[in-house]
Image 1 (cartoon, rainbow over the protein chains, first blue to last red):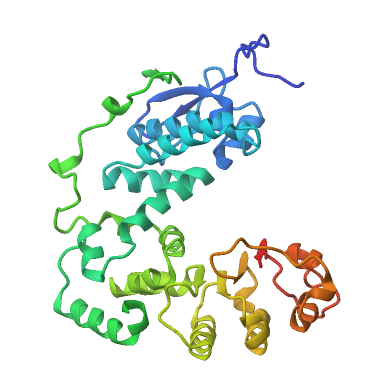
Image 2: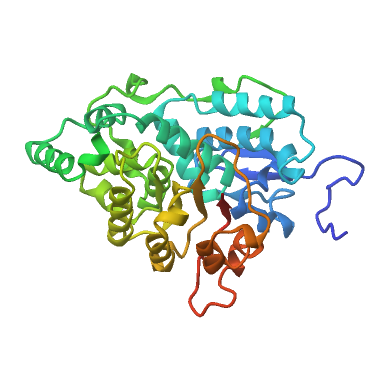
Length: 174
Length: 191
């Protein structure tokens, strides 16, 4: 009932909010999409982010924020249905296809996304991205993991520690 | 200030991304271990998503990752662990729970543990490390899981431990009638 913001438009137009990235780019999105972020949800419920105000996000740059919002916009309709009990198999398959493609990205973008999802508390995105990194690690030896994640070559001490670990945790290498 | 309106119907947003720095891509570059910039809690969540063995192997990466593993939420899944004998698996799980500084969030053991390793299962359930347990699976093999619905069909241990399937599925109530807090955070128990 309470709609203190002017310009909301009660005739079917979705309420929009503005988010401002660390490099000062303004993103206008539907409030429902931005509300996938637990961090933003309360502010938005309080009527924040509308009009000329905008919600500043000092920890998220524009490249990352645009990616984050792409996720939120795609997932907002399903989230609005409370986990989409009436979602069709087609809808779910489409979301899954989107998710798979969404994380098919450069590692640096991936890590920026993890941080943003963590800071903004977007649960679905957090687990999606964490799972992508886990998949990059799964089934690999420590050396292979190091290479995949871009670690420098191990120093002799690190190599010795690695060997010691492999002895101590033999069961993890069988 | 520039305003970017996001059009939910526009596909192909890729063009907005700056080119990957340093011409990298493919992650083959030496010494750009950016994953280590992530906070421990986030790395811990990644470690939690790994099968038990893979998670343990991340410790070999560095002392930082050893610390992360030791305090990350733990996922103990007997499938894939190299123990054939029940006793060896029990000893392993007991040791792991005792040594782990983080909480145990998921445990999967063979269903027969309910009968043949009752004492060990009870001891695990009493450990404070299981206070935040979310899933306890008694694995019956690749068959559909099912729930016992009549308490008199439950083996003795289960009656003793959980009183009834209803309380057992409502983790918060598992403690009913017991002085100690049993699994206050259990969300799912798969039988």
